[in-house]
Structure formats: structure tokens, C-alpha cells
Amino acid sequence: MSTPVPTPSRVRRSRVSPAHTEPVARGFLGFLGGPVGYFAAVGRQRWWTPLRTLIFTALIFLSFGYLSKANCLGAAVAEDGTVSLDWSGNRQYTSACYNDIAPLFDGRGLSQGGFPYAWSWTEGDLTRYMEYPVLAGLFQGAMAWVSRLTYPLVDVLPLPVAPAAWYFAVTALVMSALWVLTIRLVVDLAGNRVWDVVLVAASPLVIVHAFTNWDIPSIAATAAALSAVRHGRPGWAGVLIGIGTAVKLWPLFILGAYLILAVRSSRWRPFLLMLATTVATWLAVNLPVMLAYPAAWGEFLRLNRERSWEWTTIYAMLARGTGWSGFDGDGVPVILNAVTFALFAVLCLAIFVLGVRVTRRPRVAELVFLILVAFLVVNKVWSPQYSLWLLVPAVLALPRWRLLLTWMLLDAAVWPLLMWYMLGAENKGIPHELLDAALLTRLLLLTVMVVLVIRQMLGREADPVADAHHGRDPLALSAADDGRMRA
Figure 1 (tube, rainbow, N blue to C red):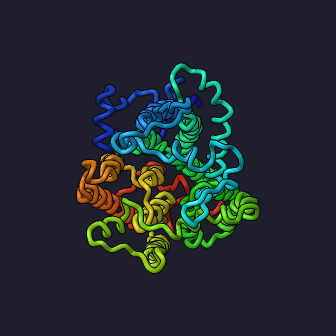
Figure 2 (cartoon, rainbow, N blue to C red; figure 1 turned 60 degrees about the vertical axis):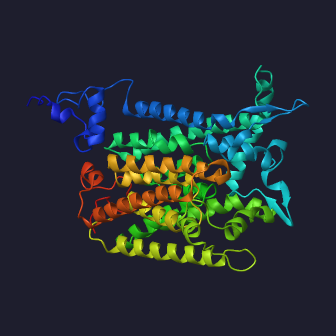
Figure 3 (cartoon, rainbow, N blue to C red; figure 1 turned 180 degrees about the vertical axis):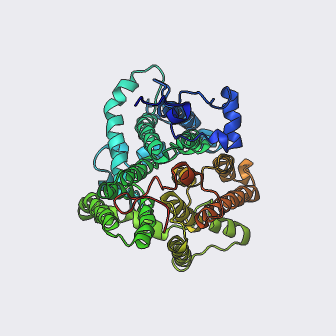
């Protein structure tokens, strides 16, 4: 029997184009030349593959992110020839170029060498240490070592370059590489909806926050953990979650999503393996510092226990509007801590009940997104760059381009508004009402996104990701179930 000639429909990949459902994507593709034709050779481009296109897009937006911080990297030369950062005229606020990376080069002793957790300084009667989790501190120390080693090559340039600015450049270069790795991993996680990753690579949040703090390593570890689960390696996923948690706390929340799925399927081995390797990895990273520098290791916990609300939280809005501070005794926000913990616990319980009881098996990205939003909304600290954490889960859970872009643009706008507010009224800063209006709008948009995700889980809204994967969850733990979204 002769082999049938493959028709274009058979040759065509199962890749889904968002131009079929998303007006924003349709308009963009129309600008480029129109939708994909019936006889298009999808998947046969030799160079400009989706992955390379997305990486190129990510590099462009990373360069924008670097430029957004550039005005804070200027140098000032003292009379003795010392070169330092020039933040005169409140330029960190007027240019919205503030970042934690450059000033902490000197502020955390990284310019002096040595082990990051061995350095301390005093503030009044208090001895302070590096306040970041262990791997975040070690990452900063490694970047500082590279920048100190290579700074003599930069110091010969005719234009003065502050050591802290060079440290920022080295850190930004390495984090850019990690972000490109993240894009590669998210392409794998997106499956047949690969072009949704444009929303990650070209997000306005990357411009304002890629280099505000050290959040990208934790995002890369989280994406790698989800990819390991997708490929049936729960043990390695746990290792990566442990690494991510040793950089920032939030990757630990991934375990909550897989706990719900384990309860639903009554198949515990993959989840327990993931949990065990998470704990073992976290302990392996933390124990040496915990034992050698216990006070420095505990600085992260002490600071988070004793600090008050951050500027963009619901508690900050409440305090600015009513004067309520949430403090109780010796300046420690006991009431605030109790309220935030209780609210997050209640929301996590609600997500657990919802995830276990819905008829259709919830997707991992949906659960992770709900848990992260719950944490950020009720937590007493929502540093603006934390919104980067939501990028990947939001795109994988709810790939609605117009809604996500609206949220990203508004969330990115919070940053210059916050900088403008922090100038203070004496420097013509904006009143708090304008900042609060932007924050309330962000909260409203996130609420809409949460409602839509819940409706997807309840089967009352179409799920484009499940539809693109024939009813399967691309992030399902293949070792625990067949991935089909059924009870």
C-alpha cells in the first residue's frame, strides 16, 4: 500500500497561535504581516525559531531594564580621587532608577571582600548583618568577588566608573543570563502555547524590576523546578525548590500546589520525594552558615519579624488613610504580624479546599498563581519587584493577553509613582492619594485575574491552556498521574 501524502493539516504542529483568540496578539501579528496562513511551514524555520525569537526579545527588554537604572550608576570623583556613586539631587527618585544592588556593594561590606555573613555594622545599639537568605547572600558575594577582580580593567578607562557601578554591571550580566535560561524553561512549560511567553520576555515589569533586587535567581530556580516536574523528576524538582527557597522564600509555595494534587490523586510518593529533597537541599545550603554565623543567619528572620509594613501594601494604604500603624510594644509590629499570618493561613486553607473539591483537576500554574497572589496581597512586605514572581505563574495560568498586559503596565507604573511619592512633599512629591489609587487599581486587576482563574477551575470559563494540550496539564507530575485533568 502506498504511503498517503501528508496534508498541510497533518504536517502542521499542534502549536496554538494566540492571534486566534487574543485581540492584542492579533493586532501585533497584523502589524508584522498578518496571521499564519493555511500552508505556512510551522516549525521548520532554521534560525528564527520561537525560542530564539523569545530570547532575542528578552535581551532587548533586559537592555531596557539596564538603561532604566543607568542614571543611578554615574560616578562622583572626590578631591582625593576616590570614585563613588553620584546620587545627588535625589536622582534615585527623580529618575526612578533606585535599586538595592549598587548601594549595598558598600553598605553590606561586599566591597571589602571576605565572607558576606562575617561582616557586620552597628545601628544604634543593634548589630546588623547581611539580611538576605543564604544563597542570595552568597550570590552577592560571588558577584562582588568577580567585580573586585575585574575592576582594574575598568579603572583604566578615561571615564570614571564607580566600583559599585561595575558591581551592578557584573550582577546584571549574570542575572540576564539567568533570565534567558528562565525564558528557555518557560518555553518548555508553555508547551503548545509557546507564543504566550512573549508576555514574560517583553513584560514592562522586566524593564523596571529586572535589576531592582536579586529576584531573578529565585525565578530561574522555580521555573527549573516546574520543568523538572514536567519531565517526571520530582526529586530534582525538590532540589531546585530548595535552592530557590535559599534565595527567596516564595519558591516554597510550589509545594502547596503539588500537595493539593497529591491529596486528590492519593498518590503520595512523588510529592513526598519532592518535599524530602527540598528540605535536604535547603538544610545543606543553610546549615554551614547557621552553625558558623548564627546571628548573621538569623538576621533575615529578625528583620522580617520586627519590620513594619512596606510602602505598597494594603496596610500602608490603611496607615496613610487612617493613621493605624499595627505596632504593639517596643516598636515590634506584633498585631501586624499576627494579622498577616492569620490572613495568609485562611487564604491557603481556602485554596486547598477549592483545589481538592473542584470537579476538574486544577492545573499546577493555577494553584501556584492563587497562592502567590494570596501571599503578596496580605503580606506586610510587597517590595515592588516582588511582582516579578507573578509573571510566569500568571502567564501559564491565565494567558489572556489584554488583561495581563493591563496589569503589567499598571504594576510597572507603581514604581515611578512610589519613587515620586518618596521624594516627599517638600520636594514636590505626589500626595499619597495618587499612589494609593494606583495600588487599589492593581489590587482590583489581580482580583479580576483570581476570579477568572477560579472560574476556570470550576469549569465556568474556557481554559485555553488545557484546550491546547488536549485536556492535559503540561505541568502535571507524570510520575503521579497521567496528567489528564479529571478527578
